[in-house]
Every structure is written in structure tokens, then in C-alpha cells.
Length: 303
Figure (cartoon, rainbow, N blue to C red):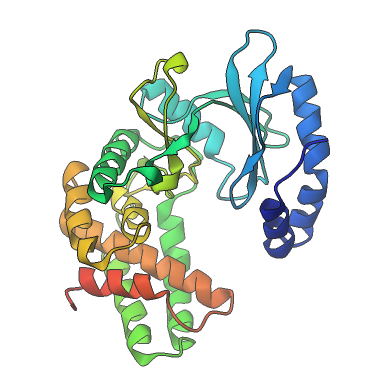
């Protein structure tokens, strides 16, 4: 039996509804099934994120070390194997997909060095530069047909924005969310066509392994892909390892390395504040996250 991390079980049961609870209950058997069917041997301690179980494994046929990833398939995760294949063919610096079962979403991935995430790099500015370079490699690739689209996400968030703003408890935050919506409205007609990661923060970049020919390389993983404007990619680098004094420096570096129009990038970054605000209100929040407020105010020039 696989020992599923308690934190993953709690999260699936708390936030996943009946589907999440059923998936949590099925995980040990599902892991056992793929260890058997794909000829894998457990090779370390099970790991997890918010919604996925990741098992370090060895492929019995050739001794190659890999990672078995099991997660619920939903709108955000359904495109992951497609994106990884496309990025892999383009040599764009994403983790390699070694196997996939479309019926359950199970994936066998290249093993990276989980002991060396980019979040462990002490120099925050150096980490931002690595993240910018990783994003630049990813967004060169056009989104394949059938990928969910930023344009559709923009329509949904703009429809919900007035109601979400009205339910916020703070008048200043209500105005701020309305201003974020106005910025998105300016660019929503040209949502872009690049293949976006959507969640490239410092914990989603790991060091590659020499045995995979990736010594010294930083590798992106765990995308929630969609097709759209690369400006929508910048927010995680501002929000994670948050430092108010570094927000504008990071934004300028990221938009510069990616070769983005600064005003469009600003609008789409405000779109992430809007999206998170809408989601928060939908879940019962009556205030915006404090660091999101700071990021939005800085990008709007309201120091």
C-alpha cells in the first residue's frame, strides 16, 4: 500500500467535494495499479502538491528513474500532457512526459531533483532571472488546437467582476477590482495565442539531473496550460516570495526578458489580480489578499 501524504488527503477531502473524496480514497489502489502495469518500482518517499500525488519510481525495464504523477483531471489539468508533449518537441525547457493514460490522467514524468527547487535559491533576484528565462522559452511555443483559452477566461472574469467588487467589504478594494477589470477590458479583444504555463512560480522549477542530460538546467513542471498572452504569466513571480520593494523591478525584468509590451503586460497582470479576487469572493472572501492589493496599486501607479 502507498502511504499518501496526509496534507493531500485533507486538501482533496476539504476542497474537492465528493469527487475529491472519492479520488483520495482511490489513490493507494490507483498508484499500485500503475506501479504494476507500467513496470515501476517505488524509489523514495511519496510527495504531493495541493492536488497531485507524485511517486519517485524506477522503470524496471531499463532502470530509468522517473516520477509517477496522479491527479484529478479537470479544466486546469486536462491540457498538461498535451502541453508537455508540445514543449518537449520544441525543446522549451519543460519536464519530459514519458507516459500517459488518458482515461485517468496518470503521467510518468522525467525525474528532476526535488531537493533543488528554484525556491531554494537564496538570491531572490537571481531566482527571478531564472524564472524569466524559463518563461521566455515556454511562451515562444504557440498553443496547440483544443487548448483552453485566455479569451474565454477573460470573458468569465469580466462578467463576474461587478458582482465580486460589490461584495468586497473595503471601498478602496472595490474600486481597485473595478480598475483591474477596466484594464483587462482594454486588452481582452486580443487575448494572444502562446502556450502559457499559468502557474510558473519558484516551486514549479526544479534542477535537472545529469543522468537526463540536464545538468545545470532549470526545468519547468506542473503547468495549468492555456493559450493566450504571455503577460498573463508574470503574476506568480511577483506574488511568490513577495517583496513590495521588488515588485516593479521584477515586473520590468520579466516583461523585458519576454519582450513584452509593458502596458499590455501590466493589463494582463492586473487580470490575475482580478481573477484571484473573483475566485476569492466566490469562495466567501470579503477582502482581497493584501499582497495582491499592493501589486495592483504599484502597477496602477498608486504607491
